[in-house]
Image (cartoon, rainbow, N blue to C red; front, top):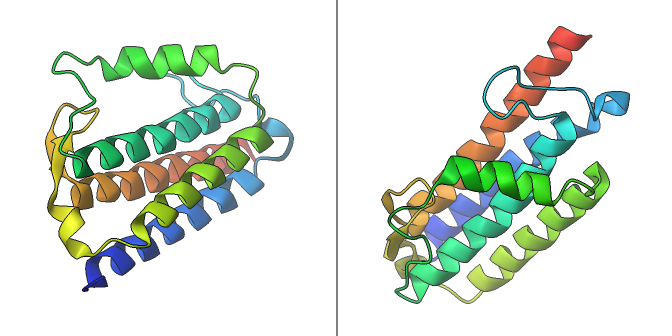
Length: 160
């Protein structure tokens, strides 16, 4: 049972998550400061809520792809979903968002524990509407967390 690719992706996910948690640990009292001036115009806390929801969503897409299912409809509106899901979870604190991200990552790692690299070739529709392999979805997870962590760090540098 080869797990070389899975282990490499797990390492990338762990590094991206550590980068994100480092960025979030630096926020201090600026948790409700607006980080984006365009688009969703989220605060740092709202961005953490988005990341919490996205992490669980990626898990759901991955698990479905492994079963040969597509849970994302062809007419899915990612921007609308992101906006509404963050609004619905408005009361979630930064600490709660971090804990729920930890729970969803633990669930992914537990699911991967008995899988071999062959599972990574299964395809499904990602929320971006692109058909992707599970390996590609995991790559998107890495890039998503890294990108938003970098946004937080840029914001904190500009806000200092």
